Amino acid sequence: MSNPDTLAHPAPQPAPLTHPPLRVAAFLFVAALLALSQSLGQGFLMANSRAIAGEIGASQTQSIWLMVAYMAPRASLPILLIKIRAQYGLRRFAVVGIIAYSIATVLSLFVTDLHSAIATELISGIAAAPLSSLAFLYMLEPLPQKYRLSVGLCGALTFIMLGTPLARVLSQPLLDLGGWEAMKLFDLGLILVALPFILLLPLSHAPRQKVLHRQDFLAWGGIALGFGGITTVALWGTTLWWADTAWLGMVLAGAICALTFAAVLELHRDTPLMDIRWIATPRILHLGAVLLLFRMLLAEQSAGAPGLLQTLGYGTAQMAPLFGWVVVASLAGGLVCGLLIRPDRVPMIHAAALLMIAAGAWMDSTATALTGPDQMRLSQGLIAFGGAIFMPSAMALGLVAALQKGPQYILSFVMIFLSTQSLGGVIGSGLFRTGVALRTAHHAAILRDELMAGSPAVTSALSGLARQAASLTADPAGQSAQAASQLASQLQVQAQVLAYNDLFRLTALLALGACAALALHLSWGRLTAALAPSPSAPRSA
Image (cartoon, rainbow, N blue to C red; front, top):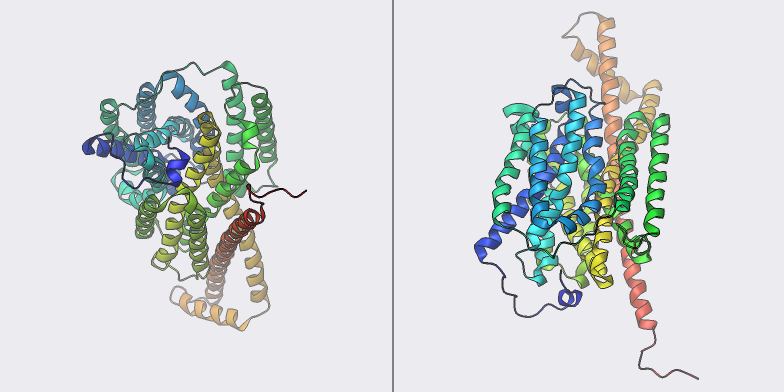
């Protein structure tokens, strides 16, 4: 890893490459394949849950279990994998990880019902967990140290984040080719292309050490149960409703108990999986809160824009050009971040990212029932660009803090980063959908009141719909009933559009609030530094 001083004050001459250019390109190519493969698997599942449910004979509600099975191990398993990698070596770790993911993908081709689909998605989620680490390692390996926390980190995170929008671009062509099986075969193809490169391009690693202990598995079990419980509640909360389903509360209480048990166990160990005391320091808590908040803000793009467009009747194929634009904006953001990132520039990068998200969300908050994907290209591009420049800079800041404390603290920081990203994404999407449901009910009640009050606009709308129904039936009563039914449907759609607008505005305000808090934090730091006595100043008697 890079020295913080080197990052803050780069040498004037570029550092020479430690590998030939062709070998560097091969390493970066493998990193991109690994990052895209693990993120595309999740993206395909998120974007096509309805189509997948239809293929396996499950309901739309039951398909939520597929997301639970895939996402639950993603938040906790990387914590244990870092010690497994240190004990058994990188080469074995890489090969086993790739083969496990390939086997899990092949098994998914034989899915016939919901239960087998849940089992294969659970295996896929477990097998995909090592791929993010491998993507980082292959991206960083061939680069000089001074570029690892800039070019390397930005490149790895950009490709990892690229999977979700790219999955929405590729979904319809793959669905037309062969449905869910075509998606799985595409993902399998990516990973099999990477496999020979991994065998020919081994990663350098430190000597293997025996670092695993029985208590590691016990502590990880508590973490896995806790994170899995939170994931389950977040994904099911909006569908079953938080306060109406007793088992959701029981699962959440069990998750808290499991995490408490893991924390108590880790506090009393000499070689814990994660250093709880360091994680609880103000600096790291602040960084974790920032990462969690930002991931929740990005729910506007993962749950907000697609949800609004689906409400307005747009399908996967019609949304593909919009998300193609999101892919381009993400790549541009990653490139700009790699060129500009430096520890002293991180606050300004964060401020720019928050302002872009605020601007994009505010633009989306003016949506109407006539809004289409083309009208959201600029706003979603701004949000994608902001996310692409924020995440690498935040992670670089955390890695520098971990390195200043000691190399062993990188594990604890990686845990914070991966957990806030996995859990933050799930929790953010769940809260966003909950907000939409609440505001939809609010706006629907207001519109119904206007309908009952005999609003002239409503009366005019009913008359117009009745005239349209006259071409289908000559019965006046039937015309009125059909007009009322169509008006009720349009009322519900309008209420949902207004609800999404409310949540978009809230996202913009939260981003602006975070930007204002950042400005206050920087101002307070500068004021404190200005008022602090000089070390060379004589002390007064």
